Structures are given as C-alpha cells and as structure tokens.
Image (tube, rainbow, N blue to C red; front, side):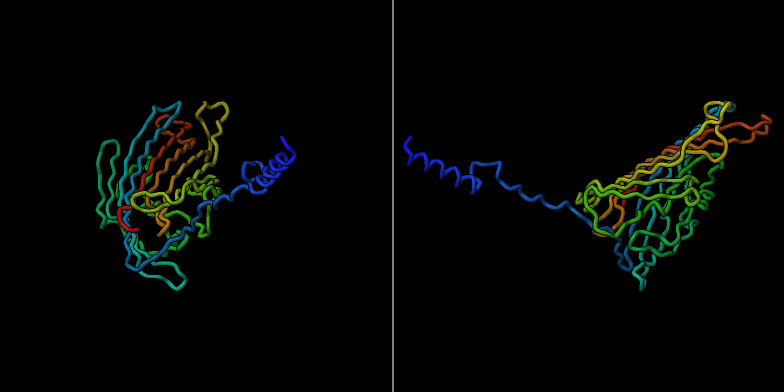
Length: 295
C-alpha cells in the first residue's frame, strides 16, 4: 500500500471515530426517558354519585386441644353509595354515605337487611381520601344478627377509601407506615408497605394507577406446657395483601382485591368443663370491590 493510500485510510478511520461511524465504543449513550409519574388526589363535584359493590368472604376456624373443632363460612355483599353534597372552604367535601343493599350467606343461610334500617352518614372527605368519621360495623352486625362466637368480616364504608399522598409519585416508588398497638383496630402493632406497580393502565374503562399494600404485625407465642396451640392473653398475628387500582382522574378506587389472614389465641373459661382452655381462632378474608357508578 502506498504512503498516500495509507494516510488516506488512517485519516478516514480517525474521522469516522469523531463522527461516531463504525466506532461503537465512543458513541454517547442516549438519555433514558423519565419514569411515568402520577399525582393521586380526590376531586369533588357537587351532586356527584359514586356506587361501589363489595363482597367479603370469611372463613373462620376455632382450634383447641380441649374442644371440638368448629368452622364457619360467611359471604357478605354490600352496595355502598357516596354523594357529594357540597365543597367546603378548606377544599374538603361534605358527603353522604349510605348502604344501598346488604346481604349475607352464613353457612348456607341467607339473610338481608333493608337499607332503610342502616343510618346514612354525613361526614367530611379530604382530597387525601381521609374520612372525618368512619362508622364501625357494630350496628351492621346487630342487624344481620351474627352470633358473638362467629367471626365475620363486614364490608364497611371505610373499605371504599385509601390514603393518598397528594405528591407526585413514580413507578416503583415505595413508602411505609406504622401503627401502634393502641391505635390498631386489632390491638397489634402493624407495619404497612406500599409500592406503585403500574401507572396508566386501563381497568373498567378508566385509567388507573395500581398500588400493592402489604401489612403484617404481631406474632403467636405458644404457652409453655399447655399444648402447641395454647396461648395466653392478647396474642395474635395478622398478614394482609391489598391490590388497589385508583383512578388517575378522580382519585377513587376503581377496583380492589384484598386478602387477610389473622390468628388470635387466648385462654377462655368453659363452665361445662369447669376449667380454662386455650383456643386459637384462625380467620381468612377475601374482599373484592368494583366501582359501579362514577368516575
């Protein structure tokens, strides 16, 4: 090869490297697009109606070395409605919350509560999804005439709402909350972890963000010398997984699937046996929610 040709080839290679042609090791990486982000918060329109259908299936079992095993299965279905009455100066909404229907199947026996027997609740709802007042299930349990010894988880108004941060969040963001035993509805310290697993999905004709929530707390400690299932005092364990699909437009739940496993053990008095016995109650719940109207 002549010197002139050699210089020409060398010059071409140098030029190619400067322009990036044929030299991948010198090419600059392309900037990656930002992860999708979303800001979830509730929006209110006076007169707006939302309707939710909830179904909760509960299986409970009582175990003891001194008593026969007992189990129950209950399926409770409810339609809950919320109507925005007005927007308050602080940005919250005054809402009316009511049961439209409530039915239960307990071990094959059907029962239904007329909606007129369940009081309507008027309270305030914030853009962060917080209700000022959340009624418990005591009145509902009485109306359904559920025996005290049967564990049944009821669909409640509170199940239709989830806490929203109101800040921009990206796919993969995580956060945690802690609840002390004194604040917990089950008397156990609880830790809850949240994670955004999808943004911009289509569910029931609405664009949603999906959040997975996992909660756990407590532990079961056997009572020495009294059998493997025997535990004294307020001793239990709870584990929950909850997939919530939230409308990016309204901040409302579009659908929800939750599963909860709880176990509580205590010592109870059994007069016929003239002694105290240790019992373990295991309760498994599955809840499904669908928005029927609104959005």
